[in-house]
Image 1 (cartoon, protein in one colour):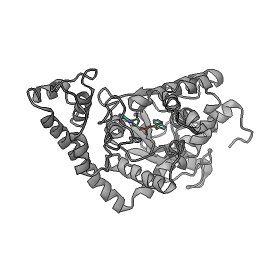
Image 2 (cartoon, rainbow, N blue to C red):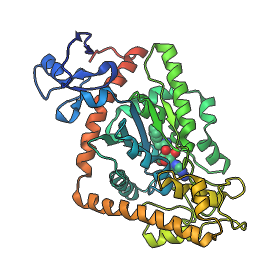
Image 3 (cartoon, rainbow, N blue to C red):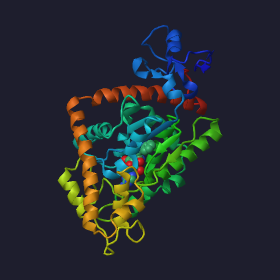
Image 4 (spheres, helix red, strand yellow):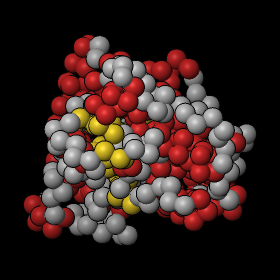
Length: 393
Ligand code: TYM
């Protein structure tokens, strides 16, 4: 049985019919075309539809949905890959994966326009090079689906300042005495909540640092559901057991991050292999000289072990300890560097092919169209529930 947003219920829709939308707003494309009587027209939400939006019913109705994004503030790094991107890839066969590029989030801090555009291109190319398949996953730029920003504003009006004050990312920047922090940086968790809730995902795969934002998202969703009736699915954060927080190679008390000042603590996915190897060989360890997984007393070694384990199908730490028993840090670092370089070489090979193929625009166009077909009806439902609409679309 399928309920159209006009209220009409259709029963006995054959299994093979393609559908667009999701949940209650999931319509067989054929039904919509009959309603409009003009193929290639617009659905109730005003969203144009065509083959690009025709998800096969069999594929998506039985699948749980997952959504995540990466902010292309700079070049993607090994932490992004291990904590997030590689997980998106491994989930895309089992889940309906929505993976977007959070370009609104990157302007919360000043950006050079030319550099930002290059980073955006690279980010999409790296999504694909790392194995995201546009046939299985919906890949798009946040700004190509304007509903994110609109729902973001609505959710910001339902987020308390006390909650935003508790978000560690803003607090950290403030504590470091950074001047002229933007309002966007402060309210960014509400926009992130909109990025998520607009698609009603079941899970949000993220590294450890983003868990707090997904928890806030859940609080906002519960608050709005209590106030307006059930609007949003409550998503679960999905944080990997190993590799959720890859640390800086030069200071293992700090997270590996795009804003690494020395540039030696962070391995970028597009670093040349010689540079990457040099960074690992120079990674800070300790004077104990044993390879043991003990993050508290040997944070540098534990970090390298996490990198090695994550890149080797979550190889158990005991296994790694056994292999390097009696060996020195030089041998151990060489093994980590070999593994990292092997992975980077594969990614960079595909990255070069993707850049040369010119396929990025097509992928983004199609991904945005699919995403919009989900986001537009959701935004309307929310605005309607809040009492903000007069014209029924
Ligand atoms: P961002 O761009 O900082 O990071 C992207 C993803 O990479 C993970 N990550 C790490 N994982 C392990 N070790 C590290 N050192 C490391 N550094 C980063 C992050 O946890 C994240 O999963 N606000 C988000 C982007 C975003 C988003 C969303 C994510 C915007 N809207 C909606 C999920 C859902 C961010 O700035 O991530």
